[in-house]
Image 1 (cartoon, each protein chain N blue to C red):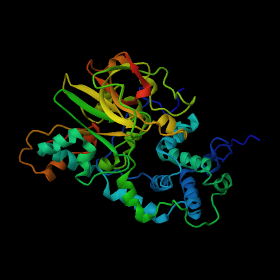
Image 2: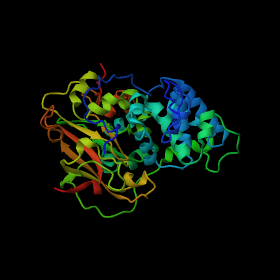
Image 3: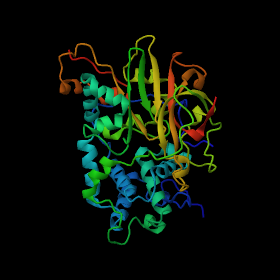
Image 4: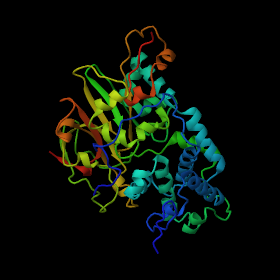
Length: 211
Length: 223
């Protein structure tokens, strides 16, 4: 029997998900009911996961790493040698950040990170990726027309700058270390970190000196 | 050969829409639940990250294109749960299940912080690298899983058959092409390879622009 009524669940042997309600909120609710009833998922674990990524882990952690790389040459050297190890000394580690490489912007080269195949992202440093990072538009376009994409973020690179786009196709996760803005010589690490946005560390932004 | 997720370089997508800085809030409550459920169920250890990616990539192309991000996650999760016989098709259709005691490998709330902070490293003892930084290498053409036709691979179509330069070696990493399909971890040396954007696209925005990819040794041959 063919039963492809729009919006109606249907039975697809390769894709049992089609047995769930089509409305996404109802799908998730149904799956959550099944998984918790069967003892496959602890409801309190769901809260703990959300507490982690809504409150604790986010770009403020990556910003601390960048600020320290700017202010502490020894740490910068350690970051170059083994970034995973270096950030672990700051208490930063974990899922989707098991193998970190820090890539430094220079006066000649601007770095920018994408995952064209899915949405790989350095979670322990930046948290859950924003929607634009996971969008088809960013995934499709960042590798072919990075400057057009940067322009959509309001960013224009100096003439002659080259762009290196890092497509994260394995379990290595990249953290962009932007150049330290001029006029920040007097600032401490905390003030420096406040200049470092999430987008600076993906390569779709640049830090600005305080006015 | 190609699947719908392999979209690097594709034409026709609209502008990228930036968002405020800081921790990105979830747009919908069900997005939060979808993320948490996927991570918690992943904690059962019944599938690898490579199998999870393959499940998302194996959605019907029409579904992949119309589903939002977390709809892909939840659809793939349901498919994996049935594939691993943790949930039945009848339970999915009913939207409920008979109560059961906690599964042996259930991720408990108290273990969440430790599990997330530890992650799961993908480096393994493995063969010595055949290439070193500076070496010129050519990627497999066409991009495909050499172990299983239509299987998971991490060589995007846009980089297939191109010559680039090894810039980093990462030691041996679990091979997704086998690990996604229960064919073992088969660790191989992993490299970052830089390609001239002009080579990949025929023309580049700037002559010096590059694209780098992380590629396993079996994806590469000397050039």
